Length: 240
Image (cartoon, rainbow, N blue to C red):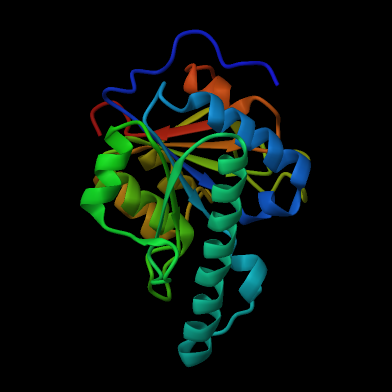
């Protein structure tokens, strides 16, 4: 893998939290590449990874609610914990020490605490976050935004399997329009799917920059860190 070189973003002001889709963990070659990219960033920027994976365990779009939703969401949180352990193990194999914190209590993973997480992040050690927020009814998108606020990251990188944000589902509509940059107001006005409503509202309130990009494309994480145009940037508009 090509080493990440060149000018990095102003990480003193921003710092990064990568929200890694659980789907990535089903593709070993892609995951290996991501691990390599992350390993090359350690010590260069403040970097945290929040892992998803809940939908693959509990069944996305199951439409359950009430007590059933509580149980399926708990299954999802355990799914993210498994993915967090896998990422931690792979980073260890790559010679990188990672601090893994989980919102779900378990004996061999450190319990999430905001102060410890922020200290790890500020020390430029790799921080792996799993377990969502530890409560049902909240997505890992919401967890990513919340943790970014708590540790002081100003940019949330949402890794997906598509290029970025479109006017419609590009897999169903080949004429869907791709957006390079959007304001929060434009996302709301056009009812675009960037994150779930809770996550998006929280990100807007705290003026985070959201970057939606294709994490399956090799090298994209490095390009983002160097400040190159990748995916869709969502941020507060001028005068907003």
